Length: 382
Image (spheres, rainbow, N blue to C red):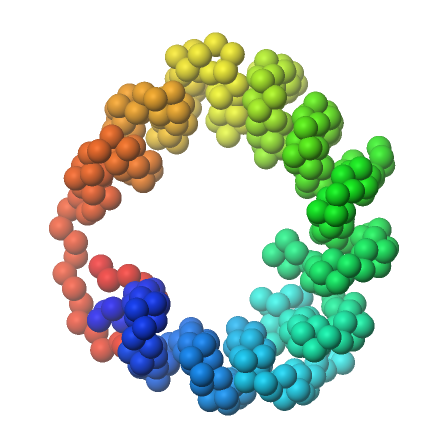
């Protein structure tokens, strides 16, 4: 922590808080905040709010309401401080009709979509659900980090028919999944499956929806249908590796590795008998399930990229999965770069901890330390 490395400061603060030494945790975070670390104010004010100083934390955050991270902290702290209406007024003042931005990470200051979402958070916890819903309908970008805030809101409050109508709109793919989740949790599995539609429904148009449907079917013992769903997507998107991974995993889980191999063989033929390693490696677990690990390793080594460090990782994974960890270590030790983490993990599994540490530490003396007057750093000490 003395280096000023922020990650160490956070870890030390969390430990002190867990040990009940709250004043010390607050103090070390405050020092970094006063030194100007860009992440310290968020951590400091949240720490204050957790320990009876929410009013003080709120006042510290008010001047920074136009910062996306700190505005989020402000809304969270406002709940503890009982100052929701003040936070709402601040956010409303930032939502200008002429504001334009491509997304929350492309704006200087607080973008309008984030301000709307934060204001909706306040209205929801005040029980003003219709207002929260209306705010979220004004967003320009409906899905952030794989979730649709409006769909989440409707789901939380049991407004299933509104959610169903919303999910039916173009561009609301995340809402389809969230509607299916609500119906499945409510015991309506057939209804959840139906959300993904017939041959022209979301699962037929969107590989992500198809994958969600396949997982839903698998959870309810309908693995054969799940395989059919992913096979159709694999046929429609030949060479898309993540779809092929999903199909192969389903075939393995259902005890049908030969079917997975047959599909990959057909794709291999369509590509003129050439597969780069990223596609070829998908077949290795299937070969191992059909003919054993040794056969899979033999096929892997025969590939044009079979002697690379990244192929060694896959070969070692096969061997370790079969309980042949010593052989996996030998494979990885034959390469000088790229797989030190995997090698260290296998060495630990064998109880060879000192060797694992040696792999992860510097192999040559580190460069001399350079004196600095900086009080914080985003990089670990070297």
